[in-house]
Image (tube, rainbow, N blue to C red; front, top):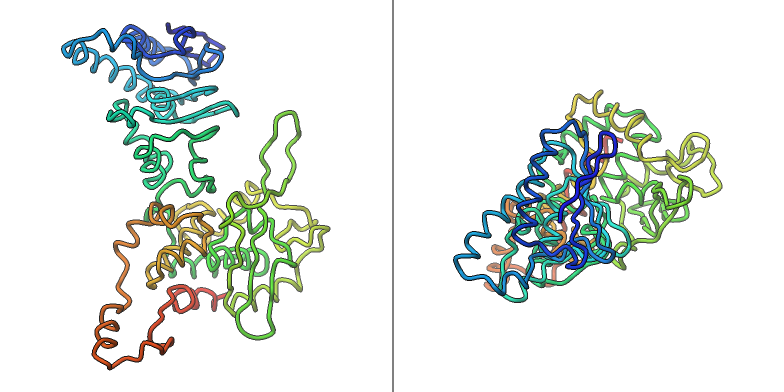
Length: 416
């Protein structure tokens, strides 16, 4: 039922009940817990959780066994199952789930107990037990939220629907957006100004400023072409997001830059950019290296820039010079969203700016920022309109746009 294979310093724990599609029985759960305890005390440096079944990783609990069990039997089985999931979750080594085929119910939860999930194109994830009134009992309600965010976890748990290939593709969004943006991942406008002041003029300052003001993803910015920009002589301009740069290795091919269209219709968008950023981009265009792709942010030789090089040679050193904590480049996107929310932007405005396919995704990532957002005086203006002291047709008094009127964003842009 459970097989342990050692490959040097890597321990492979194989779910080995192929005729039953690795359905988890009481005996199998007990053996899995015992095997994990053995691996935990071994010299293994990493663990892989895999399957010997041809079409399945694990299909959850053994329903045939459960059909023969009394209520007392079910109560005795519960701690055995908990020990199995807990044993995988608490392994001291890094654990990788190698998933192919169906990973349903407990199969999805086993994958969530691992540190990394590697899934092939046949992989299918889901928690179908909710369809018959059962709560995922292997930690799925907690672990799924931590892995993919509140909104996506709610979608999978409430509907019981199944998704293919990757848990992070539940809504086909960029995988960096999968987790809620906490305070540690955000730079406030004062910190943004410190960062810009510590960056080198030209490439770095323009790229970091563009990332913060527009909220565009790293891959979208590194794929940006000058033809995607509308830099007007006066006033705000426009930025069209049409593609994203990826350096991911495809099977059987060498690593090289590839461009992909946005994953959703909402991801293909046009962002209005303030005149301060327009001016900064115009200045950078005069210095920008020439490239066949007409890239806005290329390497000095005109070739596409790899994100690891961007972080290692540009972004992290700039954070260090500014004496700021280390955050990811994606934090500039989160910082843009939080600044918009703090300025009173509606959830749909933030959604459209970031290119999310659904406002529930935006709310799931930034829910705590909306909770702390200051009111924009809508109730007072409604009262004045009802009493005749405010003209509802006066847009300058009625409409409040967090990003277009947010002074923090304008101040940050002015420092460039």
